Amino acid sequence: MRSTFIACTILAITLAVPLATRAADRPNIVLIMADDLGFEALGCYGGETFKTPHIDSLASAGVQFDRCYATPLCSPTRVQLMTGRYPFRTGWINLIGRGSAPLSFFDPAKERTFGHLLQQAGYKTAVAGKWQLADLSQHPDHIKDCGFDEYCCWTWIYKGESTSRYWNPTILQNGKLREDLFQQRYGPDVYNEFVIDFITRHREEPFFVYYPMALPHNPPHRTPDNAETDRHRDGRRFGTPEEFPGLVEYMDKLVGRIVTAIDRLKLRDKTLILFTTDNGTHKNYVAEIAGVKVRGGKGKVNEAGSHVPLIASWNGVTAAKSRCDDLIDFSDFLPTLVELSGAKLPSDRLIDGHSFVQQLYGKSADARDWVYVQFENKWFVRGPRWKLHHDGRFFDMQRDPFELRASIAENDRTREMLNAGRRLQTVVDQLHKP
Image (cartoon, rainbow, N blue to C red; front, side, top):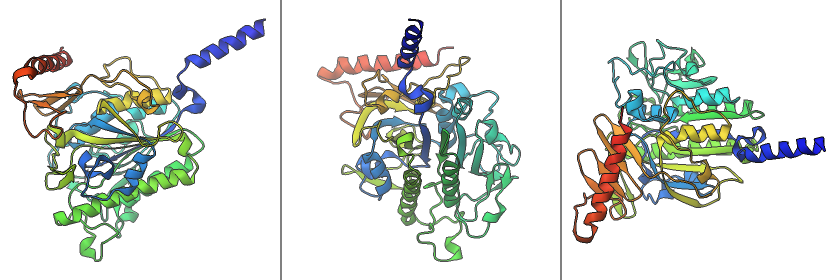
């Protein structure tokens, strides 16, 4: 009788624990984030300008989210992604450091990152690529202090000098400069090799890889697929816009290498692969989607600056060729990874994000009613249909998905629009309450 009671108790406890948090079922997680590429650039989203076969294949193997939003610039979006908190809470509402100006510094003593939380949950953690949250020559332990066991990152600025992320890169790996890289190595290859090596070495234990890619950020240049001379192997040389498609294609190729390595190691059933981008495409580039030419909106608080792709692939969990139109923003990644890993959310601060784990399983869930995007003194808040900007501009995203014409209250839609506008303004007012 006693043994039966114990067995039933254990069974009840086991059933009460969400599938993703049981130790044996916790997935490895690889979060890939391209640099400066809006949703309109990918074939799987209907983009017609660039070739992205590997990412398109990843989307076919999993779920594609159609309404994901980031902040429109590099560093603020990284902080929101890593902390699950909106920029006005962390002070990262713009990029403070440019060129030789004082650099922005993300203080790991004040904020908790998904690296911290998954590390504490027993995951081996690594980051490779673009960090851009501190001067690593002054703070060589910064990345480790942010919760990552290992790293291989472009230094951004080192000892006051701008450094190359592409050809002949300046890379800090686990506290040491990679001085062997100064002879015609291509930075994106180095970051990619590091990720594959880390996954290979830690394939027998749960791991989390954060892979913020350097590509396809400016300057335009030739990749290893078409670099012919030393002049072409200059990561600081500004090339021509005609070279940009090659950057997108090489970025896609590197994503393919990661997926191939995970397949080769027979880890696909145990690994959630997430692909997204940090903000919209640079304004120099135009992509065509659904017959509409969309100019990149990086740095702009609008659809082109903030609407980014999000793809999730986990064999046996995410349904192949599935789509999800629930609203997602970059504060949602941290609580999602916490739920999947069995980690715990910080209890001493407000987390703005909402987990989208149930959407990965294809289950109906309480979706967000709105997402919020802020950069400098500008913001917008959007619901499933309507979007309100800080200056009062109002868009019907159902009729105008590219935000080409502000809506004006008219006839039968007047009451619906006014009510939607009031609801969205209330969201912003509540967010910023002391």
